[in-house]
Length: 263
Image 1: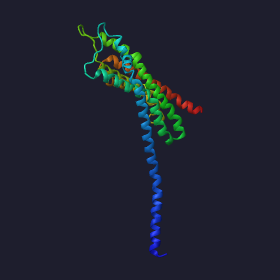
Image 2: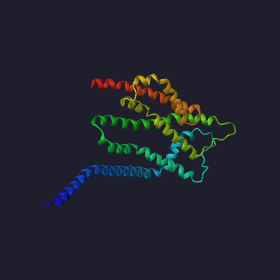
Image 3: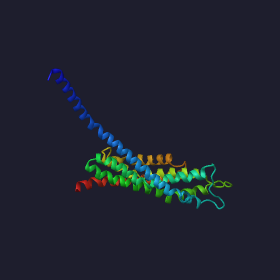
Image 4: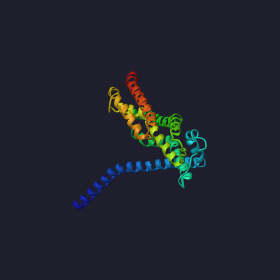
């Protein structure tokens, strides 16, 4: 074999080795992207299936959501639609929101299935309870808003109207209002999870959080002012539970080191 043929064979071997070494690096990325695409498609299909199943009851769902206000409206008044498409769009938007909320456990399960293989065993044991508690707390926040906050809030609003002003709320405006409160209280109820995560991650300590309690209370009222309508009543209804949930997060964080030492 001549020197030229030997050089050519060596070059081919080098190219082959480079291809072999680079191919495994690219294959996992493609596989992850394909898996991510498949999981997103599954999530969208589940949301779509739930939405189609609920769409026939869209008006009933809206009646259920609007009941806290309708029961407190003055006699002879009713909710109105000031826009042409509101009678259709308001129940449609509410049904889509309900489908996403109902599908949330499946959505988070798909997210968990995507990221779980990259976690260590002790991280899996910690992450799953956090994800599960986050779902339950978000639902609890929405339930608290509907059953506790809405009756008090709408009772105040409907009786505070000036004399001669008829309370006749637009259905689309009401929907935007309650969806904003649902998100606000759902996120506010995640405070215990956020507190525990910060302590476990070493971002801060329980003693430091407890020492900044006054600043946290002030932040709760500022957050309530930004996330709720511009009245002190609804701001307080959001700020006080946020503060109590912060205290719950501190209590849970204090118990975690003890449990770790016992194990």
